[in-house]
Amino acid sequence: MILRHPGISPTNDLVAKKIFSNPEITCQFIRDMLDLPAKNVTILEGSNIHILTSMPYSAQDFYTSIDVLAELDNGTQVIIEIQVHHQNFFINRLWAYLCSQVNQNLEKIRQREGDTHQSYKHISPVYAIAIVDSN
Image 1: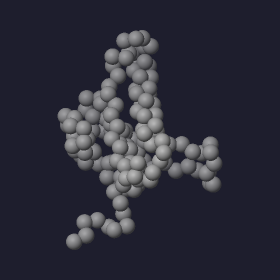
Image 2: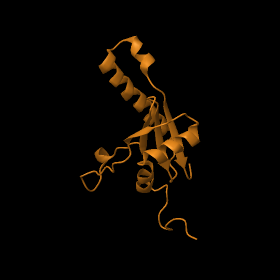
Image 3: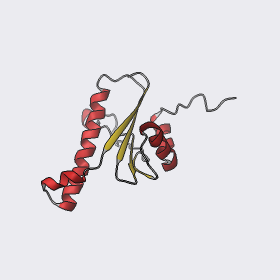
Image 4: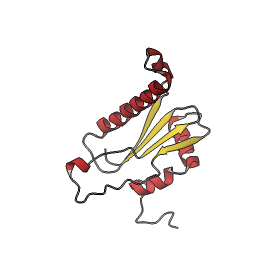
């Protein structure tokens, strides 16, 4: 019995984004991996496929974005990153994604609450789950 198409891997970027675009699957995955009491999840990033319009690609066209960003019902955010090919600085990139997300969240808080030291107490946790094959 074949459980899945032999040419399609769940760690392929497009397939993973399709899988994690389902809030129920993503919520259960987060509960299983991080043991967080998530009841609901909103997919903030990951359901859209980004296409660069210029070909061939140049250095200025290069950008990275997280594979999936989910927000739990309590405001906690979870980055899900899939990396199947070896990348020397994958952990550094994952740290950069985490720091960038915390900074973006802080900027939103400052716009809403004002730029004071009190804004730091409103920062919600951001977790990361890395699904890796050869890193």
